[in-house]
Amino acid sequence: MLGWSNVSVASTAQQIASNAGNVIDVRGRPLNSVRQDFEGKQFSVNEIVLNAVSALDSIEQEASNTGNAVIGGDIGNVEQYFANGSVQHAKNHLVLPDLPGTLRQTGTNTMNLVYSQQSVALSSQNFTKQAEQIVDNRLHVTGAGGGGAIVQEGTNLGNIIVARNVNEVIRDFSGDQVVNNVVTLQDGSRWGSISQNGTNIANYIEAENIGYLRQTSSNGRQIVNNRVEQVTLDGLTQTITSPNITQNSNNYVNVIVLKKTLPDGTPQVVEVLQSAEYGQTVQGANAGTVSQTANAVVIER
Image 1 (cartoon, rainbow, N blue to C red):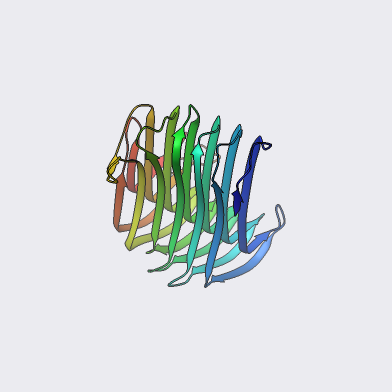
Image 2: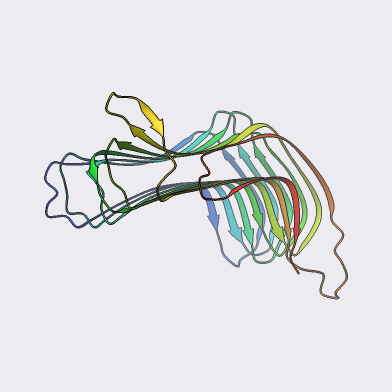
């Protein structure tokens, strides 16, 4: 946490908070068998409180958490488990009276990731009920503001597989993914532009060849909350959507991306079982995009 009373000599401020647990990265080398169990909490927190007008040109806060990640060549059996009650929480908090030229807050959580440039034989991924990923980007402008650009971005990734060939996958996603991008302005505060982007992705697989895939999602939630609020002179809070405010929200669950056909040009046959009983919620999508997708297959030629 940074708390400054005299910031007249500073031109930039950057905070980076990062956690990593259960990460295996052997790049192109083979892995025979991997089991990863994550039970606990990851908190990455950046906080800046400015009590006086500053001469800052830019402020950047970046918070990230990574758990249960495997990166390798030919990968055999992979089991990944994110336990009940476990949490990934990426938080950026900023309080200041005026705005710099550029202000950016970025939060990212990644859990249960398998990446191979070659093949994955068998993968089991479980993101359990009552486990959650949360991104909180919060900015409070206490004074006159300014003409600067505000950017808030939050991303949650859970149960992700990217490989050339995947033989068999069985996985379930039953937890929560939440992104909060919140800007609070005083009545009369100025700003140049505000951009808020939130993305949740659960049960995503990308490959050229997939043998058998079973993926389910139930009892969980995907929430993107993009909000710009103004505190009036009488202390009330109202939501505003203009001017120069853009908000984008994306929720994806159970997504399959097939990159291309087999080497001989024949179509691929993929045995797929997908089930989604999952709540997807968006608040704030002004002048931007909203995507909510469940049980999707995309074939890229």
